[in-house]
Image (cartoon, rainbow, N blue to C red):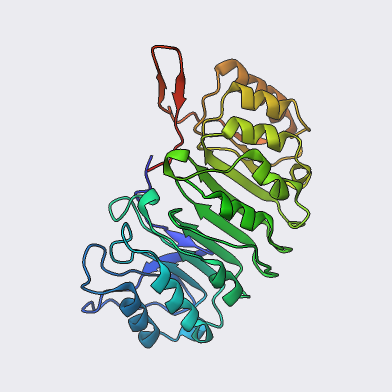
Length: 318
């Protein structure tokens, strides 16, 4: 699976592309949409920073509630550093900004694991009123531990998430965070997180309001599931998402053998490698309690070497 479609909505608002310089498109009200600002993808016809300056000049930015950063020129070769700097330089012009997504880039523009990112900590500390932040792409992505009293949703989409980002989030003080979504990815594209690195998140002391936890798209999904099985944070969750990874029968058995999950509203395990008997056991355990299940296998690929070694794949890698 690849990401082939741009965000259609963000922060509860429909996404709207800020038009190119020579377009005559009528513009909606500044606070009625999530504005996607993009630069030229493969050439320097218009850099992202120039498109953003046009946006700021054309718009009453004091009313903008949500902003989506689309492609910048040659994201496969150029980091988002200048994008981040431009956003921080404009923060006084964006007092109403509550939603920010960095890197809404689809595979035709740049594969997810080729997107070059940078240190995004400054965006979170620089916009203390943000309620939602998302970022796509793990190459050179950095996020140090930070404190944020308003952030409710945090999403990090990668084909390979560096452990320094996981540790940064685990060390952050996020008293308002309700929704955390981490795509851990594969070591082929830089993932180096181990279950022990997730302990601060799974303990949950710094996440008192967390209700939706997604630790997904992981090549160590069985180990993640085993760690989640005894995690204190699970007791307060409404949604647990371990989808898009290499979850097999061992991980599911560990999950079912841990603390009860019958309090959940939803358990998402789609894109898995579970046998039918284990899937049936999950249904029999959780459906009578009213837990909504997603057990769509998505028919994931599985390779077997001559020596019997089995290779399983995450949903989103390259």
